[in-house]
Length: 276
Ligand code: SF4
Ligand code: SF4
Image (cartoon, rainbow, N blue to C red; front, side, top):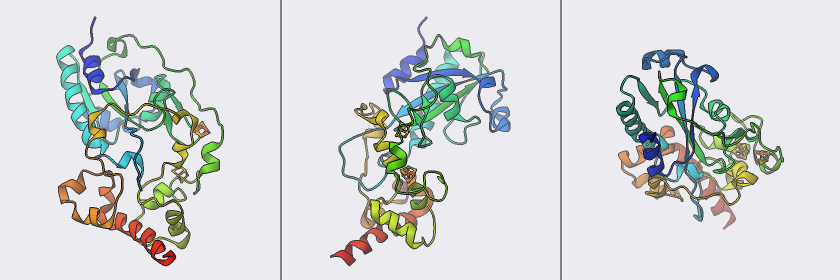
């Protein structure tokens, strides 16, 4: 039997996905599933969406260089649910670009797509960790998606310690001490927080614990056109100020408003002027 939804994913450049019964997942928002018309007898199709592109001089996290992933996934989700509904008209299919009803990282590990890294990120043994995880939810039983081999039986990384050694912030406090969280904080930063931004030169996010991870060595670039187009790898005050409101809204950093990114750029620029 040929599966149209697999052809659609393959034509997008998405090679790794797997279904899982919802009963085996950690359901976070039962209400959301109910609103979708789905209960725990249904299943989820977990999809790995790689975004890695190499060779750019940049001052922000790789994920934030192209337009916001959510734009991509809402469009992909629409096409996937339409395709699945044609193939299986007796079932309901819903996508969740944001606020997934289950813990999708946990589901991706349980579905055999990859493992948890000590840096707190999901890692595929083939794609590495520069990826997003998306989900399609349905009342269809898992078995109807077809037969899937696990990509890996491993659930944890090799614990090499490279990410912890390289981390400039506090890996154990991803909400406060992590540079990625600090660059996204609103308002005035502490001297220590400013120094971390100056030290790394990052105006948005932090990829250090990914860049040193052995699973990210020699990974392939994404084949997905959306992540290869309209890239802004280096942000300056002018670039941020000159973006139209709709262009700015299409960027991952827009949820923190222009002021937050400009504040980070100014912290780095101020230091540069002092050293000149
Ligand atoms: S994102 Fe950066 S600061 Fe945060 S845990 Fe990873 S290396 Fe540390
Ligand atoms: S750098 Fe090492 S310890 Fe950290 S996530 Fe990668 S494999 Fe695990």
